[in-house]
Image (cartoon, rainbow, N blue to C red):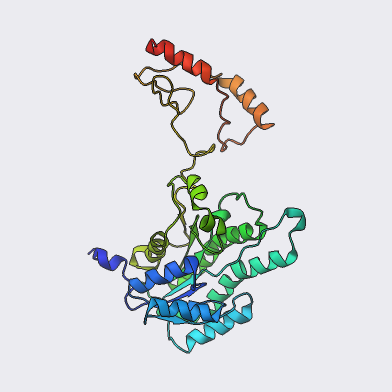
Amino acid sequence: MMTEPRQLFSLEGRVALVTGGSRGIGQMIAAGFVAQGARVYIAARNAQACFDAAAALGPAAFALPADLGAIKGCEQLAGDLREREARLDILVNNAGAAWGAPFADFPESGWDKVMNLNLKSPFFLTQKLAPLLKAAARPERPAKVINIGSVDGLRLSDWETYSYQASKAALHYLTRVVGAQLVLDHIHVNAIAPGAFPSKLNQAARDDAETMSASIPAKRLGEADDMAAAAIYLAARSGDYLVGHTLVVDGGVTSARHPGGHRTKRPGRCGADRRAAVGQCGRGRRLRDSRPRGATRRRAAQSAVGHQPPWHRAWPAWPRDPNSDRQRCDLACGA
């Protein structure tokens, strides 16, 4: 018998802990969990911000200030939660940091701080809270761990945030490794890789939304509902059959973006939509492909990239002469 649609996304009666939950993505997730009926604990290094965020979410949210930059903080947070709860249904490892500096000047402190909070902390906090997660886990209703990664761990970023990108890529893989172990105890570990969401950590999205949105296929930034929906999906019955998966929430940046930028229409004299060197003009006439074929094209591609490209890499765009395109279209249409 199928579960009622409303119950697929319900978190009624569940206990959740969201680290870094006082602002940004963590706050979006915490608010979504509360709205779906969960009792939510928020952890953050800034105690006042932590209490303020919990108060804003209402009586179902509670503050547990903690600095997770070291194992000691993970142990403290786990102990504080054990004093209040006998089980934990959902753990969201969201607390994180970033550091940007030129390659030649990137400091060890910037590397260690980011790696400790973004990678070391999620592992050891999950380890310390494993007994509470096991207490909540059942075959018919597994406990959940959700690691918050980033699209910067899936593709190259324009920013020189070396430790951040490396930490998020490692966290995605750690999700699979730990997930393979904890699924034996009915604890399902997954991750979310957010794209551009306005936050203190992503100041480019926060301060220049228009420019950032233009580079996203969906043509907008991520919103609170987008992140809450993804986290609820993984945390509720709806996500029970996912293990070791990274859910990408980025408006199409990693999966629907054309290599040369998002495709746009370039009309000619007859209103032609030329998406490539071969296409149709506005009157439906087929335009001739003047690009070289076979070995000639392969040699040209090698010359363009300096070596034989791997088979999985897209061929470089073939140089086009817009004037010759226009002439062919004019002739075909009788213009």
